Length: 447
Ligand code: UD1
Ligand code: CA
Image (cartoon, rainbow, N blue to C red; front, side, top):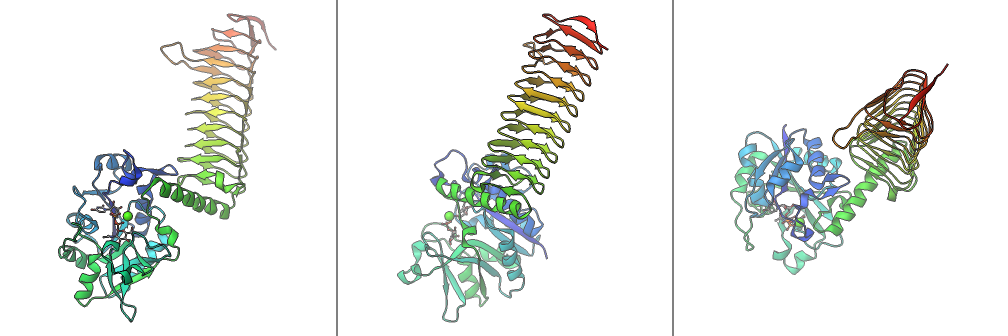
């Protein structure tokens, strides 16, 4: 049985008051539409079809080619939007799951239960409903005396009695595909000039078919985002959901309200996340690390037993037993091998620091390859940029760089070399040689 999802995302989202299409507003680093796509992909095991309209080009560009798009040029209603998918899906799927680009919190379990219910159902429609105290804006589920579903009535068209109904249309449906494509043609224009998907319920009933309503367990999953207030609420709920998952997997989060973990992150057991920690992008944190307080880690890989305090780490690889900070900054291409110590006010970009190397205090290393057990004195700087080009620095094992050394690249320092405090090194230094001064010159061969 093949199931494919159709995700409606053609609306402008006027109430966001934004030049960005509503479905592209991010929640924890991903456009809100991404969540609807990934959840429905997981449930259907098929490539979702996304109905785009307002600023379709930008939506495609941001969301990428992992989905199929159909264009709804004019927003003539939810029924019209689903009908746009007819040309790409007719005959290709047995069931159609309809979801929305602005409902990021709908869970995989909820969609699965709807799909399972429809697969076991004789009639052509299962609709997901929510019972809520505040029904404003939602379509009402109208049932007969036996409790069978008769219709979905939009709020604007509802009678006072219908307005009192507390069972609401979430908008999420699972349809039998063969029935759906033909029935969509039978929807009539509403008084508001739209083709309502919800009219399919009455169409099915009038044909003597049955419609099944499946009530969602947790109505908060059904929050649709219309304003930036809703956006913040949904972000908080997603944050809480992700944090709870990691806590149950063995990660300590000291103050979950201030810890933001994006969906592409993985974290090992017994790691502690201190307050105000942000783990972003494709980041992996190993076991038994301590991260934060006040730390941002983006698109980086970290081994086990590392400690990062008050630091910003972007695009870096950190092996085991490394400690960083306070106030460290690792930039793209930084690679700290196991046991590296990087103390306060250090910056490392596009550089490898070998095992056991220490860089204790305010230094900058850029485009450098540094061996093992090197000591980088306070205030050391790789002068890697001559105003036109970047140049590399190579430092051998067990080198000792004196405080305030300027390493003017391109430059090589041999194994066991030393520099005196304040040296400005402009020429390569041989193995086991001490250089001092400005520009630095060799004063003795070391043993
Ligand atoms: C719809 C339902 C209502 C339900 C509510 C739940 C209909 C007629 N009504 O109402 O019963 O309680 O959702 O939130 O279905 N969209 C398109 N193209 C269109 C129209 C809409 O892609 O032509 C998309 C929008 O971008 C949005 C979603 O469909 O993501 C829902 O559309 P909206 O106009 O907000 O429907 P509601 O009036 O909220
Ligand atoms: Ca809506």
